[in-house]
Each structure stands twice: as C-alpha cells, then as structure tokens.
Amino acid sequence: MSPFSIKTRSYINDYKKILRRHVTQSTYAAKVRTLHIKRQELRHLSDVDLFHIANRILYDIESWLVNQNISASEYSGIDEFHKNIKKHISAHQFDNDKITQPDQQASRAIVESVQLLCMPLSEKTSALLKKNITLIHKIGAADYLDKLSEALYKKNMEMNNHFQPIIQFFENEQHNNNR
Image (cartoon, rainbow, N blue to C red; front, side):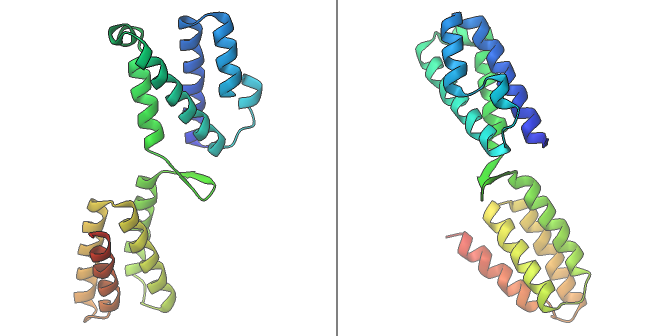
C-alpha cells in the first residue's frame, strides 16, 4: 500500500466519523453509498480510485459548508478537516493512470541529473539529462532549476564546454516555459 493510499484511507475514515456525528443515520447511509466509501468497497481500490473518491468528498464538504453556519463548521472541525484533505489532494496529481507527487518527481530528477553529470557525456546520458530538465521545467520547481543550472554551468566549465548542448537545451526549456 502506498503512502498516498494509507493517508487517503485515513481521511476517508475520518470523514465517515464526521458524517456519523453531524447527519442522521439515513443521510449517513446514503452518503456512504453515493460516495462509494463502504468499508468493503475501499479494501481493493487503487490510488487513482482513492484520488477520485477524495475529490468527491472535497466537493461534498464544500457543498455542505456553503449551507452551514461558518462558526458551526469551525467549531466542529469540519473546516480544518477540509483544509487538510484539500492540501493532501493538491500535493498529488493524476498522471497517466497513476497518482504522482510532483515534488518527489522533481527531487528524483535533480538527484539523477547530478549523478548523470558525473558520467561521460553520451547520447544516453544526454537524453536522460534532457528528459529530467523537461520534467523539472514542467513541474515548475524553481529551486531545483537553480540547483541544476548551477551544476550544469560548473560541470561545463570543468569539461571545457563539453556540456554546452545540454546548457543550450536547458536555456531553451527555460525560455519556452517563461512564455
């Protein structure tokens, strides 16, 4: 089970507890059924399914908050729960039938890129560096871009401009993403 799955299941169970406290038994049963958060249904769900259920729960909470007194929702903790689950979901993305965490992807890409800079420049190394540069630009991780830029320029100076094509690619990506 992935960390995303564990945390999301925890939020779903917390939401069921909130529902039990704040709505009638018949409303609770109807919501559990329509949101597909019965215990038996949750057992075998993928991260993607859990992502969609969590988004439905967010929508349900937002609909409920519109109809409620704000101070009552703050008092009951629903407002805080809403902020926490929204933060959790927004830290992940649905990408190619899987759930990813962009910060972790950028982190892995920068580590791999620095490792690749220690290897001789070949077509494969160049292709992997370009893939990582594109990914980091796509995610928009400015701090990682700065670190990668610094490492590229330093390595290029050490290698007598041997990495100039990679630097040119990096600058082109930066220019294309600043539009």
